[in-house]
Amino acid sequence: MPIRAATSVFDPSLPFTDVSANINAVVPFYARTFGMFGRAASVGVLLPYAWGTVEGNVGETFRQARRSGFGDAGLRLACNFVGSPALSPKDFAARKLGTIFGASLTVTAPTGEYDPSKLINIGTNRWAFKPELGFAQPLGRWWIDAYAGAWFFTTNHDFFGGQTREQDPLTVVQAHVSYTFRPRLWLGLDGTWYAGGSTTINGVGNADRQENSRVGLTLAVPVSKAHSLKFGYARGTTTRVGSKLDTISVAWQFLWFDRP
Image 1 (cartoon, one colour):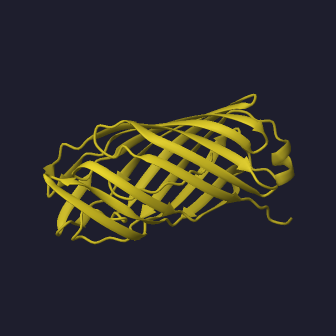
Image 2 (cartoon, rainbow, N blue to C red):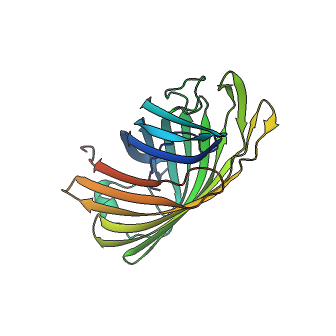
Image 3 (cartoon, rainbow, N blue to C red):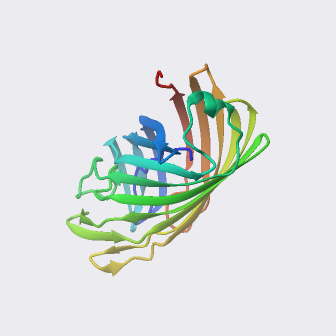
């Protein structure tokens, strides 16, 4: 299962309307593959740094905020159960592709910049856990994969002025269809749907259940044998509560193998 990195600059369930944002983020990311009980597995860590401006209405009052700092650190462990045994680099390159099924667990830690006197923060001041199942199927030059999981959140006991904030689980489903022109040169169509995530403040529920979707394109371009660039664009298509922003991303990937 591929490792996908992402970062949220502010919680989309916060009580903002007519929001305009210009956000930049750098996300250093390290992943390592290994064998686990004879199956292919991987572990990845990331630590985002974000800066930008957000403006909009809080209630009926227009506000503008500028923020910069580190976001919450993330850790992801993934293991394939079907169709992907642990192989040497030589055997991996010669393998015959087939159906792949696996699972992962993503954990984010409350390490990001956070100030309880402000509504908009880069960090979230809580832990979050996302178990997920994934499926992939090659069809010639085409590749289809889909994932289903849910985010579970711990309580933020120091939310905006010392309040207690809780959030229900947020279900996430995503699917990707990609076409490989040649090895490591591919174009993908991405879609994501998520729902849930209602919040309570000091035990009082809010009408902020999310049910949103996003679509995007991803292009991967090899630069050399070990280096490649990945370009992405995504935008919100339906938004009940939360952000409907355009996102542009550029990633540089470096791949290496350990010496025997």
